[in-house]
Every structure is written in C-alpha cells, then in structure tokens.
Image (cartoon, rainbow, N blue to C red; front, side, top):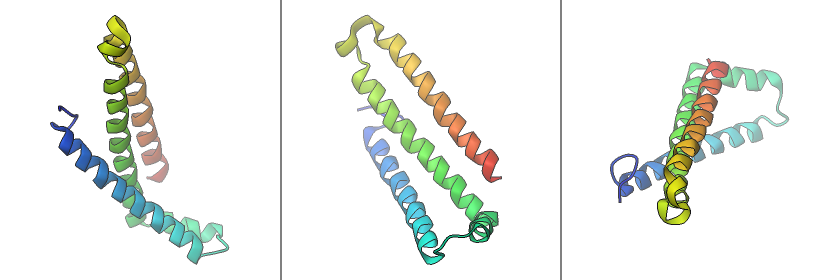
Length: 116
C-alpha cells in the first residue's frame, strides 16, 4: 500500500519513531515539573531559555507535525474515498487535506515563533 513516505511500512515506522520522541519529551517535562514542585516561574523560564530545550521543543513540534500529518492523511484516504462518498471524494479530500495542512503548519510555525 502506498503511503506518504513511499510505503505503508515506512509510514508505520515514522509514526512509531515520532511517537517515541513525543513520549520522551512529555516524560521529561512531567519529571521536571515533579522534581521542581512547587513549580515556580524562574524554574520554567530557566528551562526554556536554554538552547538545548528550545531545540528539543522544536524537534517535538516537528515530530508532532509529521505524526499528525500522517494520521490525518490516513483518515482522509480511508474515509474520503470514492467507494464511501462517490464523486465528491476528490474535492472533499482536497479540502480536508488543505485545512489540516494549514492547521498543522500554522501550529508548527506558531510554536517556533514563540520558542525562538
């Protein structure tokens, strides 16, 4: 089966790698909050002022964008197909893909602007 990255197997592997990256980042954030309880502004500011954390957050958002794009692409190809909705499938899939791409790209850029 064809996927975004060439084959469905590659898409599957990319989804798993991005999920691991996002899970690692999330565990780190929760551990940081737990270890610095009660959380104060200067702890949070010092964490996110480091270049390493800015890079980690940027990679997290890139992984999130890729993960989300593959997921929404799969939803679009599965549920907006000719066999399910007929002649409208191409236009509906184009509209759906355009909206989801805009939202994912906007969220990614927004975080990069805020972080950097």
